[in-house]
Image 1 (cartoon, one colour):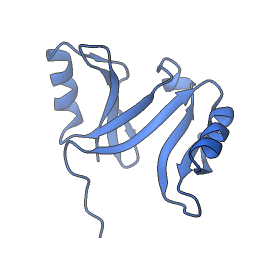
Image 2: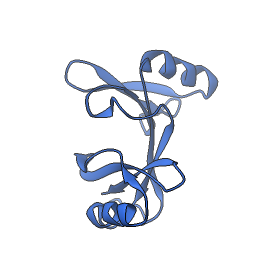
Image 3: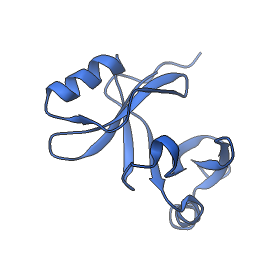
Image 4: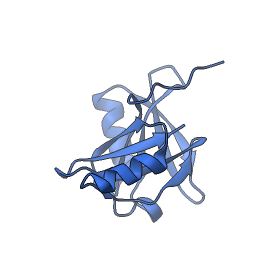
Length: 125
């Protein structure tokens, strides 16, 4: 049985871009990652994996649908106890929600912007 990631740790990272195939190939060459497609219903995003492994390390995603307005930056997903409470705390603290709360990976997440303008996501497994 695997343990849940600790609150406050980085649980995932991904990058949303208009040309994910090109960016996938860039990171395969520069970092040495392999990749595997993730079916998104009509197109594929990519899990970037360690060489010779099928363990996902990061995602490279299309800037489509709910991701269309995300900036092309690496987004860290911080583990939180409650995505709803953390989203409210974000707004109360002068931040902004860049996406609604969504379901993914067996949990819930949303993309936020802090008061300084930095973008990240909060994820509740």
